[in-house]
Length: 467
Length: 129
Image (tube, rainbow over all chains, first blue to last red; front, side, top):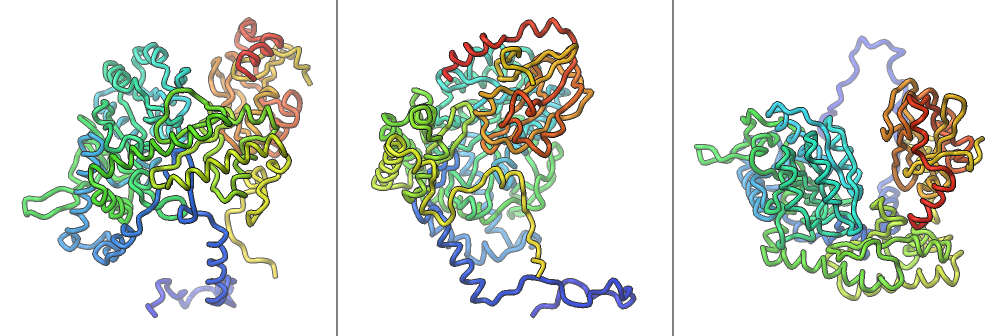
């Protein structure tokens, strides 16, 4: 056994401050612990069990070979404080991944440090704030479409900006006329835009939007949450965006949710490159790779070390395995799968917008509720009885009773057919026997959860029971 | 408790009831129904000056967080303290015990720009509800 890291209490500690007996930590046998976790795993539903169609989450398959590669001792057994000359391979992987992301996205340079998408947003918006201050410009307004992820206004506000909503038009895209009226007032620091947006619709005015912001001294932040739809097809850097975060745990197939930490690399173009966080991987005159903090305009560190390295290994492996053709095929198949589901359901569920969609599709539950009294929540819960994880519900907020489906490219046609058939069966049942739908789930390990109680009475800490 | 017919309304689904030289503000029955079960209400501090359209505070439901907007400019004179422990009152009684804030309008004539009950009813119909 290694020596205990917690020091023994000093000899002169007052007797009344010493424990008379060991702390009441929970104690269980190995068998009990093993069975506990095995039992939990049986109750769980994951991407290994079937389709996980959460919209905007891109729950694609996580190739097992990437897990093996990330466990190679040269990657898994290194330490952040190890001398640089002993981790050249790891640094080379980071440099290569940065280059891959630059090529895929059309941005000029990347940082791999941010640990998740929202952390990437924070990093990106801090760079915009710093770049504006560097110009002597203290403008504060950040425009955010009403279809955006809630993290966008939160990230902007964290950086001292004032988020201002911008409406979507009848196409489900940013209202260009409203933008053209608003931006020239000169106080807009940036727009934060997800493309394709959370309705799965490509913002076809993106080039004009970038021109407009740039003409009036503002920046364009692109939220890359839905980058899977554009892989190998279209590059945000070519659209003219200034900052882009990517989610390696979505687009680049690394595990997420309960399966592992995230990673939210941020790409920038032009003047913003100087403001990237440190450390950055640089090639020294000695021919070795180094982690450099020598970037005077940098916003500084945004994490203790260099981000979630194990996730970078998996993503780099994925990109190398797929290659340019494979990545494009992934993007195309993601779009195909979502439109296959759209086509399979559009006669029984109400589409939120008629505009063609890419990698995900959003239906409204409003008509179903009017006709049957069954809400989107009821439909989602009943899907559990059919063996499927429900899609994202009640988001985006601009769609009443939203049902947001993103199947990703890694599902077979048979799985998609079964999913479509399950939803059709629930809709049919809602008309025939609404009470069964409203009472669902009936076959899950637990019945309908009390979400109100869960939100109001937070129990965040284990405490020993009184006996 | 104000009768719905006596209230004025905004397009953001707030109701406004004139009470002497103050107004009482809440969200409509339609708005609470759209939000679903409300779990948290934060209307900020009293004594604040707000402009029309400024955020008065947030309402969080199991589905979403929604902002409540000031219907007119003025001073926030009181907030409904009961909602800290019983946010469900906004669902149960949106025009009564679920009221949100009291305000003193900077210019009472601003209230003329709001919809009356009949206009709000038509507005809801036009929006497809």
